[in-house]
Length: 264
Image (cartoon, rainbow, N blue to C red):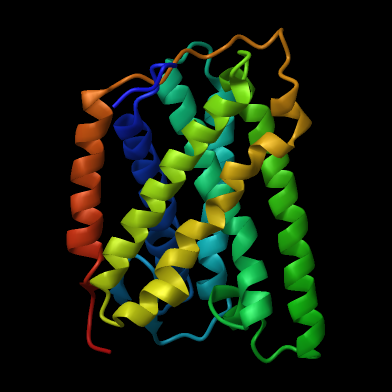
């Protein structure tokens, strides 16, 4: 299905799913997994929404996920800035990759600070006074989330150079976000912890990128710079859709139920 601006919903959804899965794997497998190995722990179970280990209580293990997302987000930003000529599809995918990683990294401390649940709650566990550390998490999260959105708004400028800019922006941000949220929930249903995992971990992970759909509030996209070349429409791409199907199948079918590394 295509819109008047020739944006294709399936291709936008495919790009959103791929970008989200990259952010998720970076967080769980590379972030938590490599941190576990680095401090001498033993990986136990890898799923789409949590990583469990044994043998070490190092705070670096829960912190590793957010650190990995921040690094990956920075790499996506760097790739976009270094690239000279990109297709609209690849350019927007880099924006989505930066968005899911940066917003995931920035939003998670807020969730942990309020609910005292998840990675950053584990990082500050035992620190005193507890209320101060929770406040610091929330303040840091709000500030970093805002600056991440400001950065993304500037990265979005090539897609906002027409009179229909805001209408287009709503479309090309909402579709990938909803596709990623759906993928996270479907994979979460297969998690060993069941439906409770969908509500407490799987859905919040994808929902952390909600700021992507609010970029129209920033001046950078409401008043695009005429000097910034406009990116063309994101038309139907069988290649992106095919890759997304494979990625989603592996994400849901393999990581959904979990990959076991050893006895609990």
